[in-house]
Structure formats: C-alpha cells, structure tokens
Length: 316
Ligand SMILES: [Zn+2]
Image 1 (cartoon, rainbow, N blue to C red):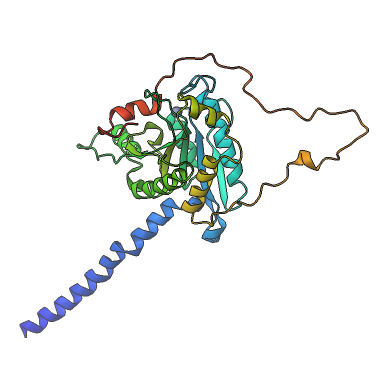
Image 2: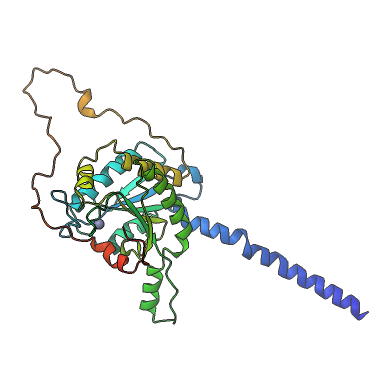
C-alpha cells in the first residue's frame, strides 16, 4: 500500500515540475530575447514583425572640437560625416531599412550620447565609422572592431556602480551577433582589394560601450597614410567600401542583397532651357573650403586606450 502512495506522489511531483521547467527553459526565454532585440519594439501590438523597418544607427565618429585623426588634408570628423551620409543614402533605397545618423553636422557628442541615440531608437544594429591614423608608416586598409566581453562585477556595488557596470557590459549578450556581422563585412572588404583582408579586433572600445544592440566600429582606412588618404578623399556614392557596408547591413537584417538604382535627382528633371533669369543651381557641394594645415598624424583617441589593452601580436 505504501508503494502506491509513492507512485501517486511521484506522478504528482512530475506533473508539477515538468511543465514549469519546460516553460522556463524554452520558449519564454527565447521570446523575451527576441522582443528585446527586435527593432520593432515601438510598433503597435497588431503590427506584423515584417512591417517594422530594420533600424540601423550610423555614427559618424568625432565632431566639433573633437576632429579625430588628420591626414595631410583630410580631417577624420569630416570624412566620417560624409561616409555616414553616403551609407545612409544607399540604405534609404530599401524601404525595409531605416538608417538614423547620430549627428548630421559638425556637432560634438559624447560616447554616451551616441549610444543613447541608438538605444532610444531601439536600433537593431549600431555602426560607428572612423578613419584611424596609425603610428606605422605603411599601415593601410580598413579595420573592424567589436566589443570584448566584459567580466561581471566582483562585488555587488552601490546602486550607481551597479548601473555603470550594467552599462559597460551591455555588449556582452551581442558578442555572437557582432562576430557574425564583422566576419561578413571582413569578407566583403577583403574582396575589394587583393591581399587586404582587414583585421577584426576584439577590444574594449569606448564608443561601443552602453550600446544595447549588435555593434561594430569600422575604420574605413588609415588617414595618416597618403595612399589611403587619397582613397578616402575620393570616396563617392559608388565607393566599394560604402557599398560593402550597405550589403553587410542588408545581410545582417536578413534582407536580399540588392540596392535599387538611385532615384533621379530632382535637379535633372528640370527643363534644360528656361527663358527666366538664369539660376546657378550648379553649386558644387565641396564643403571642405577650409583646409587644415598639414600636421603630424596622431593616433586615434578612441581606440588608443583600447589598443593598449589589446593582446600582443595583433597590431597593424
Ligand atoms: Zn576615429
């Protein structure tokens, strides 16, 4: 008789433990993660997931008094703004993608402000664009950096400290996604020029700290090397590196990798001849009238502390 009680008791226990255990281990957690990562967090409950655009926040590095690195003529903060604008324009050809810039003019921003733009817009991807200088004379080509994992705090600190730790560790849950994006971009960059496979560096990058979505730091070339500076200066709409970035974003978003042709510019639709007063609409858009004096290149400030922390043997 006692044996039967055990069986009944055991069966009841099994019923109690099993469904709950499954629910916690499986779909509930997966669902929570999807919700947290989904770019459509702000959409109405009735919206289907496919109607929400893939939000990518593009951060032109530096700005304002923080000019970044310098080449002989090119200033990093100007290049990054131009490159980010071109990338956003390319992605704007796809209605499924919404590209947001952290700055659209020569504004000075802190790393926290840049991260906040991405977090506030519930972006699915954050890209900070740069053109680093290097202390090595022959260094050239792009480079990709992703956040290194951060260790959890050793002691439970005070509230403010705990928040700071959480802020610094925000990239920890995106390491695999970061790597997926970086490897794909690396492959595309490597296909542009022979023998120029860009390195992927895993570092504590301040610009990626606090960003609560997959993120990468992309240096599009070495501004202090004349050959690279010349290439960066000529970066135009059809630039292969900008196109590669756009394709990597589309791939990461799970979209087909094609960009519809550029819509005709409104100026081209104007009648070729008009009897009215001639308009000088042919304003060249060179905003770089003021040319910086040649200066000895300095190392990239954002990455310098990170590079110090880099393991040996992976420098350019
Ligand atoms: Zn920079």
